[in-house]
Amino acid sequence: MTKWIVHGIIFLVVAGIVAATFITTDSSDDASAVTQLPVLLLAGVYLGVLFVVYILPAITEKATAAVLDSNELVEADPLHDARAAHARGDYQDAIDVYQEVTENDPYNRLPWVEMAKIQHDNLEAPEAAIITLRTALESHEWPVNDAAYFMGRLSEIYLEDLEDRESCVSILQQMIEIFPETRHSANATHKLREMEEI
Image (cartoon, rainbow, N blue to C red; front, side):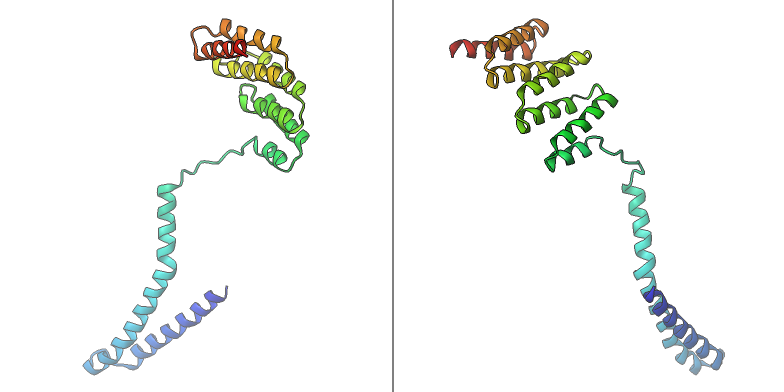
């Protein structure tokens, strides 16, 4: 606000000087043209400063926005609140938010994965993680990679946390049957061979 007042005062002073110079001098006299030149230069310099300080940045900003801005509204990340709750250690709140996301976007694998991870890693409840992964797996038909991920994670938890070798082997055998001739089947077969060597 202050800069506008200052520029307004300077503008009035420059305009007054220009007006006074042109009113008091005779335009037909060559000598008066010499006194008008410095006043015109002063007015030109002042207008140039105004252009560089205010008008040019405004034009540049508009041109940049027109070229770079997509004018698309950015959607809010539905997982943001869950990640924030997880970061502050409010694990149950994070799980609740992830659960809401699964209801609104049932084919999104990430909330299921994150819920199971929180239950397993932070709450140290592998049984709860198993229930979450099984619920996810049975909730609907998943793409091959997603279903294989859930099954692979289930087999890991059964083996490493619950030491339930039989359940782990059963899940790995299901993967071989359900996903034949895929890398998931090959990974399950490799894991079964490793387990036999132990």
